[in-house]
Image (cartoon, rainbow, N blue to C red; front, side, top):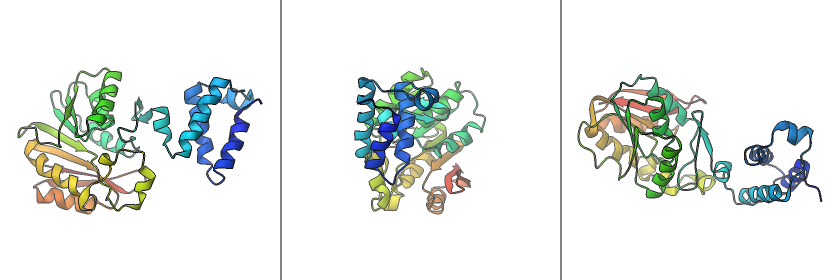
Length: 274
């Protein structure tokens, strides 16, 4: 039987009759994995080879398990760059680009030291290091497996101003070490009903005790020490956590605390000065 896109679209409709998003993901997958363009797919009605059929069937089987497309492709686009990702690190979110934007727009001076606490795939720290080659950017993570993913991306982008450290938050660092600390820490409460949707992402990078606030507290208590005078702490957080994060940062002595909203006008980033 000759198999083209129509064949697989019909198959997807039978499996997911109420989810048109899977069909759109298939087209994206075909373009990325098979290297086909719109003309080949839609006009020339490309007939898939046996090898191509195997790849598409693999995609369908993984989607049945709920695996995100980025993990299937082992690639995620962030800040105009393609990062390697797999299930050892979180998939970068578009909202996190706002955090990178804000830090980059501070016009970082040569020699400044930036710490990405909870580096994961490296998307934040690597983006800042690429944009500011005369700064020193450090990425730390408690997960040695996540650091392996970040190392792949460090090597991919051939960065000599980006350094990886395995540690439990900011414990290893001396006082007054950094100009900026940025963090997208775990902030999902263990009871959050949306966790099922994130079951393929590393639980260590998602869940935080104290209703999702424990790691904000830990990082704030350590950042106030390791930051230089007038240094900045910038958090990404859930859209219902901004008031609690501000309170935590205030308790530990941060001042001039400001809030930045995401693309949906939700409060997403909180920044304070030592």
